[in-house]
Image (cartoon, rainbow, N blue to C red):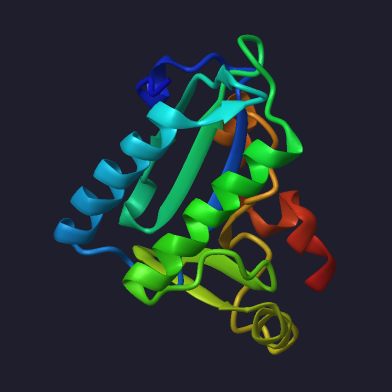
Length: 160
């Protein structure tokens, strides 16, 4: 069952998929439409899942799931990954490669390989107070408060 993302409770589980590039307005409309259709039929062992989507900065896909209604199963998580893979193919983007870092430098969002981020940190081309997107947050409360943080306050701190 699709619900607006902002109506999900703080304890709702989240999965964050950073895009290798920004989405156009047309792509955003299509993603919203496809996500709503997917989330309307998303189930775990035949039970409806209460879920929503957020598309911050026209660059990320965030799925949220109210697990107090029904928890995700392995099969339902697999189906959400297949949904994300289909978006990757449709829009020729990368969403599932976890070996990338997305960070904000002033008003620009950068998405680069982790190896390149480490090199930039070592060469002081980025510093520890650069804002990184901590895509491993677990729930909506963490997403709201710990997703955009200085690198020094995230797992990225090891590179400085």
